[in-house]
Length: 239
Image (cartoon, rainbow, N blue to C red; front, top):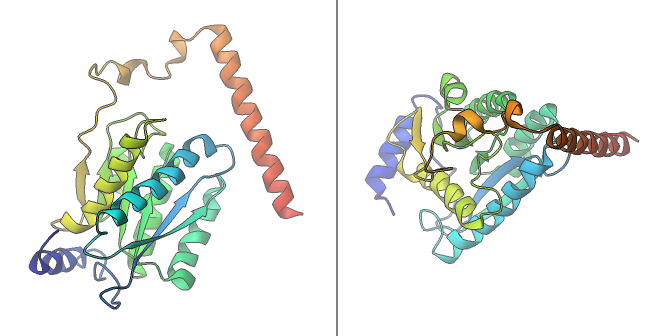
């Protein structure tokens, strides 16, 4: 747990970029409202669903250990449905209606990294401290977000390794702790976790030149099925 002096220094440094305190002023025993916007449905739900589950698991474990800054965390999650436009909609809802204390944003693809970085800037401008968890360091840092947890993983794995609850819980905890420890604006912290001991994965991961025709056909069929499912969700919502 950080000292009051460190917390105030962190908040003041963050204000250089965001112009807001680290957390909204509440009673000392009030929970910290944590807002998360993830793709829990649509074509990207294969990435978003594990993040949603990891968020819930990490918050449960952090609360059981005493919370963050001595306060429990209240989790508010929205399903962006793999639709970029919904990021802005839910970001505004977090600010105007839910009045959350902090927002965690977890992008998947390169465009998602750019979008969520801009959403983070929008939230900060409206008084919501943010932390971005991502794998595309150059994109997020170019957008000059206040706090960024970088995982040196393949795109789509910003919340930790797939099917690895411990990795996912630790990754979110590192992001939340960054809210405590960031010494100033535009702070990037790198996760100590590694995708593989051999860095060759950066050359070979999802390299279509190394995949058989059968594997390519399987992945194409899986992606087409995801698009059809997303289209059905969209059509149902519009009806």
